[in-house]
Image (cartoon, rainbow, N blue to C red; front, top):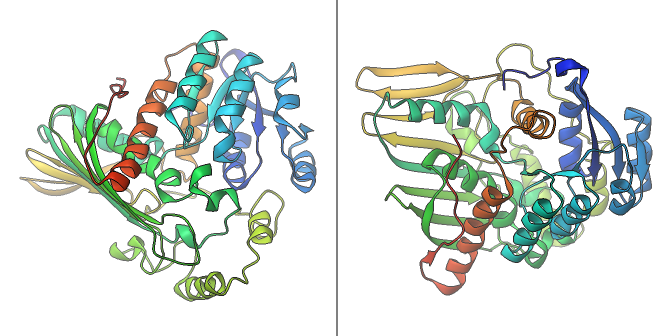
Length: 407
């Protein structure tokens, strides 16, 4: 991530189109704008207000369908941020038009869809990148560097757990349908699974999982827990509880009870959902670009504090010590005591998103290998689906589509 914010090599600019200018894209657009070698050329959405806001702010062309966006001859790559059930369809349309593809998590909602996406990218000679998981973040990358250095010995176990208010945030109809990729296992599972696979080497042997759904105001799973065993015997546990009664940020001295909402706001939102009088469609729209509740771009003014987010608290246990996130780096607890190792790369809040853009640019313009490739994304999806299958069938699920983490 050393090239964040630098000028384009030899003036080469990559022209990018965005399919689906929703909340995820609204969070991504400031990072795209900050990149001197990425040009936001065009966007597609079905919401006229969103398209007008995009044109006003960024000056790009807009379309009311993904097909029209992909037919734009100036667009070189397409960022797929449409609803989960359309990820495969839209990625394949982009590939068939000769466009390189970045697809938001989850890559797809079935293994068959993921396979078709990979086949389309190969057939059309385009790069396919599985984007936006927290494995791109500097804390995870720094932890991986320490593990791979061997300075605290062999990696022996991994644990990650998150308590968030994810289930209380505004949701559209498709987000409330597990058949369309709704719920915490589909929406948040990739963050933890991708991170654990990256740190553990990628090759997960089997999964035993449980999924929970216990809030009447939300007809989708809001909880999962799982045990993963890697091919070399490495154990890993992962938990995400998105119901928002408690948030993990309270567990660090510099954290607070606030996540997306304050405790008082969480009470009010939960009551509204239980009563069925929450105006979620409007609330969701106001979080998108140009909306009243659009998040302002994060501004880095010195090192930025880390607090447990949707990834959660991550601990790697090695032969001679444990690693975990600190406020500004990674705590290494070893035989010499505790030291705080600075992050590899930037602590800018946009760093993880910029890393995704850098991987896209390096793959398309510099023809470098893709770490978060189609097969890698499909392997992460396989684990998420296995957690849900294991919960339904109450048994261990053996995996068959895992790939090793790239050096």
